[in-house]
Structures are given as C-alpha cells and as structure tokens.
Amino acid sequence: MRELARYLGIPSQIVNKASSGDLAAGLPNEALIGLTYEQLDAVLWGIEHGLAEKDIAVQAGVTPAAIAAVQKAMRAARIRDTLPSHL
Image (tube, rainbow, N blue to C red; front, side):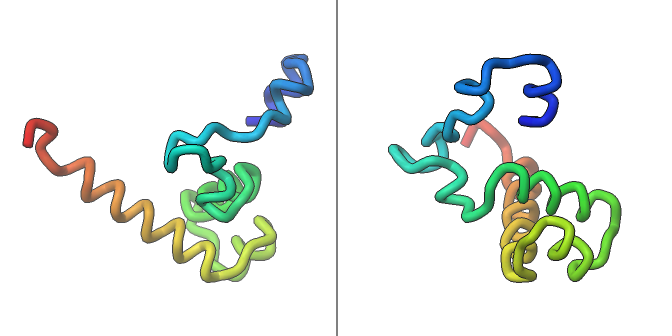
C-alpha cells in the first residue's frame, strides 16, 4: 500500500505515519502484530499464492513462527466470520 501511495504522490508524512492503535488502545498495530505492514503484505501474498513457508519467510524477511501466527489469525478470523452477528 505504501508503494502505491508513493506512486500516487501522497505526501510522505501521511505515507510514513505510524499505524493507529485500533487493535489495542494506544498501541500501534504494527507493534501489536509484530510485523511491519510491508512484511504482513508479503506473508499474505505468499500464503494466497501457495508459496512454501520457507520461501515466504525469505521473501518477507520473517520467521516461520511469524507466518504461523498470521495463519492462526486468519483461521480465527474465518471462524469469527461464521458466527451470527446478533448474539
């Protein structure tokens, strides 16, 4: 996303602004996730395209444990999406 923003000429103070704390109050999302958005994008791209974990790790510059954490979060999100919203 940041590459696209730069390409579109979005001012650098906006492009480089730290993520908001909407996942945990006051804590930037990247700190909570433990990955930069660029790393997370690379991990998600690798998962979506069926790459091997070792290839994703190299491409994204992350550990296999980080990839496993992303996959776990994706599974939890899928489960959450199947629950009724009116409980």
